[in-house]
Length: 308
Ligand code: CP
Image (cartoon, rainbow, N blue to C red):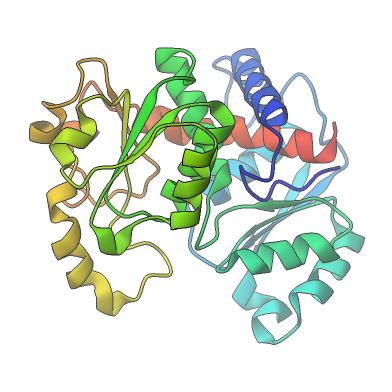
């Protein structure tokens, strides 16, 4: 049994195996109705706790449906409704949950919270997003890129805007999956410099390009995300919008990108802010395939965690 806490803390071969299994499971399901079981039922008899200390649509529903398709049951829990939100420690919560459930997925604030839960739990723990990373998202993103364009190794991802948790998981994925990375955003919102340094040290080409048109010029994949993430102070909204406006992914920007470059956004999108309607709904967008692949990628992640 293994925790899935970050891309960088997971072996590259294991990540590859998970994506291969995700694709195989997706193909095996075909078009059957979402509520029908998979042919294989590896989670039969297993209970999965899904804990949310922040809002979610995709993560909540895709994990829940994924567990059901694999024969397991879920408990979707709000941190605020648990004693966790009223002073019970993370470690004690982890010890107790380990007596009731077989797997824990938690979406929370600091990475330290997920680490502490994983240390104290005797069942696997999955990081369902923290302020600093979103590894499940990036697994779906790599899967989606490869479905549309083939191997991501040797390609270049251009990230536009805020160097947030998703951007940081992309930086980790670039090393693990062997692609190059351009960050294009204002200096004030750069990703963690240590992650950029680690990618450079691995031998990949990690570039910071403040000019968005130049940043997408050699991109195979252009990615953006909301300008105000969960955890960012509401009072910073206007300042962030002012800083990030030049990095909107729109038709004028994409005219600078290679013809076969595709666009991703992990959602929820703020149409007209970080991305325009015409790009989001246009032929280069794979955004809704990306959202679907959360389901398939996470099913493979859960199987890997449980060794089933
Ligand atoms: N992309 C993502 O994690 O979506 P949710 O916040 O809706 O779970």
